[in-house]
Image 1 (tube, rainbow, N blue to C red):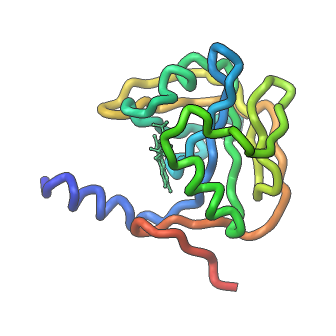
Image 2: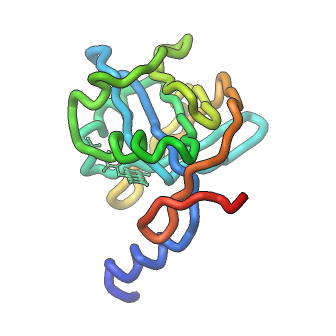
Amino acid sequence: MNDLKTFRHCLGHFATGVTIVTCVDGDGKPCGITANSFSSVSLEPPLLLWNIAKSSNSLRAYLGATHFAINVLTREQKDVSKHFAQSNHKIFDGVEYSLSAAGAPILPATLACFECRTTNHHDCGDHYIIIGEVENFKLNGGRPLLFYAGTYAELED
Ligand SMILES: Cc1cc2nc3c(=O)[nH]c(=O)nc-3n(C[C@H](O)[C@H](O)[C@H](O)COP(=O)(O)O)c2cc1C
């Protein structure tokens, strides 16, 4: 096995979209984290997953949340991605959002959104895998924001 830096560099060559995963913590405070580990799992039942680092300040909030939302970003939302990649307990201050019926923060003008009920967590190395059942979803349309080799990218027209 090569060193960790090389491993991470190699993994980064898998191009992905970019999402903001949101929930509310036990005090009702909204939490949001930029994540590109999102993946679909199952159509019937409709399941998806994402991974959260054990080092995240929001770990307890996500492991305790009954619901979360996956907000898929458009190419116009690079600043949103950068904002939610910061470590800041007041991350939603000044950010516009609404709440899903189950109480997860929904960001405006995204490409798509999946509202999920948390079904399982799996403790895996330095991350947890969080799996959710999709209760509602919406495709708003637009062009995706991409992440590749450590930088943001866009699809060619
Ligand atoms: C494009 C991109 C994708 C990321 N994907 C993930 C991810 O899937 N899981 C994760 O735990 N952190 C991911 N991060 C890092 C988190 O966004 C960042 O560490 C976090 O927001 C820091 O705040 P916290 O410690 O308060 O959670 C990603 C960052 C970027 C820029």
